[in-house]
Image 1 (cartoon, rainbow, N blue to C red):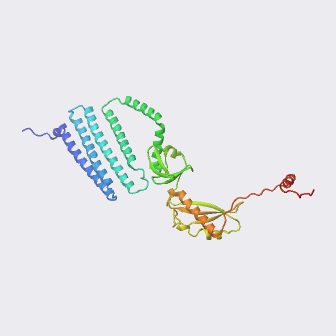
Image 2: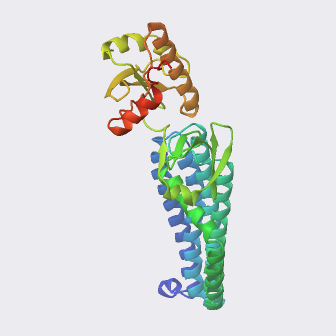
Length: 367
């Protein structure tokens, strides 16, 4: 019986390939187990389950990567097929597996963001139906194009013509749709900076006031107090001055109602007349106190300002009506008259004498 040559057996390509595959399976199992443990500890500190889903999605690509590397090494040792063809085939498998995992991971992240937006988490108001579907579509397009490019490179296909065609098509589309692209970029900046959200009452450039009803990828819809919906391009919102009356610690918007009364009154007297009853007026915040300020004398009288806070920023005109009506009722009940402008004309010299002679007839003479 021929003696077994251990060195020759260990140098056998078949044994090395089989050992490499077994070692790869063990390494892949160890890596996936360690990854599972690390992410499980991280997921234990969270309660939304997102880490668990991502963990389940990443374990298979990691395992497949280790096995593919082992197969590539085994193919290099056995020389059963052309090495370039084997590398291209195994690389294609990796691209497909990782592309599918990335798409599914993006879906899980989008689903988690939508759920948090429904719970009212700050900064996620843009995660509504159409925005989610657009992001969902864009992720798939980017992953698909990247995967096709990598597969073409792996199989040695000429991608220069494809790159030139893609560049020319991108330049043509960018020039033809520059307005739409500007609105799209502005929408991304609006989502990132979050100067406004759906439901906020805003004032655009000091002229347009309304409540935001929708933030799209091309335009933002604002419903005015007159019930008219206005579509504003996102690029316009990115360059105009926007006052968000719903931002801040609360949605209270201060109203200033100015009026002028006759001379001879004191600020203390006016406060005692106007301030009582303001807290019970509709449309106003009863928890925020009203204030009456003396703004100084004018040519007509004494100017005051009643400062109140709206309960709903979108009902500004209704709040002004309520506050001004209260001021008028209070002043009339106290016998205080509103001041008005009056002008006296003083004329002297020869012109005054002629006007006096023409307006005031002289004594009649007896004939």
